[in-house]
Amino acid sequence: MPEKIFDIYPPKFVPPSEPEKIPQKISRKKPSKRKGVLLLILGIFIIIGFFAYFFLSRAQIEIWPETQALNLKERIEINAEKDQPDFLAKVFPGKIFEEELEISQEFSASGKVSKTERARGQIRVYNAYSDSPQVLIVNTRFISADGKLFRSVERVTIPGGKYDEKGKLVPGLLDINVIAAEPGEEYNIGLSTFSIPGFAGTPKYTAFYGKSFSAMTGGYRGEAPQVTQTDLDKAKDALIKKLFEEGNTALKNKAPLDFVLLDEALSQKIIEIEPSVSVGSETQTFKLGAKANLKVLSFRKSDLENFAKEFIVSQMPQDEILAEEGFWSKKKTQEDSLKINYKFYSIDWQLKKMILDLDFSAKIYPDINENVLKKAILGKSLKETQILLTNQPYVEKSEVKLWPFWVKKIPQDKNKIKIKLNID
Image (tube, rainbow, N blue to C red):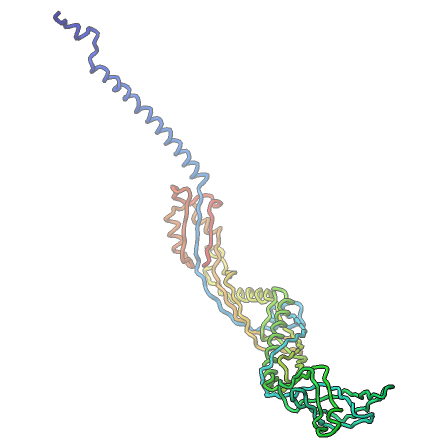
């Protein structure tokens, strides 16, 4: 069957070009809404800006003034008899702190001396010869079992023996002191038996004999430690140094923090120093004791600082330009710049006074007259204010800050102006 035209193109067919007209109508309405929103936002910003300008605006002025170093010298008196400072007379109260202490210390001897010693001990001598006593003269020889020779140190009498009831002779006996014939450690022998060579060839040789019940001691040959004069001198110097160091520490602990203790105002006196040995003493170590008295004349740091501040003010140059109607008022001292050096001159302990030379310095600067400056810049533009500050004397540097950032003039309310003075 042949196709009909309306089967291909229905009668209610909408051409595709018609729907494209609908977006064109919508796009015409949107710009009007955007414009309204932008105007609303702009109005809000204008209101905020107006409010910030008249109610929140602030100005901060920072000024770095010129500073001047002032150096002065004065001679003052510290007097322990005074209670209050006299700035006019330059006399200040002092205080004496005193400490007495005693210490001792052990030191080593450095000297050496050649030394020989003979061994000594005791022998019990028996008389098994008869009931008659036997005299032994000084230096009677006794020979030990190993051939070491000893001599008696004194004249002695060995008592005779006694016969018992059976007629047997019980030997008499006596303990005597002996000394080795020669020095050396080899004579420090243990227990031994002894014969008397002086009786050799006679019946007494076997009847008189000796026994030791303790070892011989003291035999020596070599070097021994000895105390020298140098040892004593070094020990004294070391002990005195230690004594003074401990005394100084004790004085500083006694003095309050505000007090100044100068080394030149310190009196150190040795009362007593006594070693336990003398030069030549043969010992490895020795003790040395010392006693000292220390005192110091001190003063309060705050008294001199207050004097220095007042004196600097009295000597401070005041220029004509520093007037009440100007931007600057009188010059002031920068607190942190004050430096004081104390130089000792003399001290009199009887009068309890000391003379010092003070060398003090400080930075001075002109103080700002805030009320005058604020009145001069009220309502001025940022540029005008900067020019005004730049042309002022004593101004090394200045900086003007406004808030909010779009504000270009100093507020009319001086309470909204902050002035900061920076001292380098």
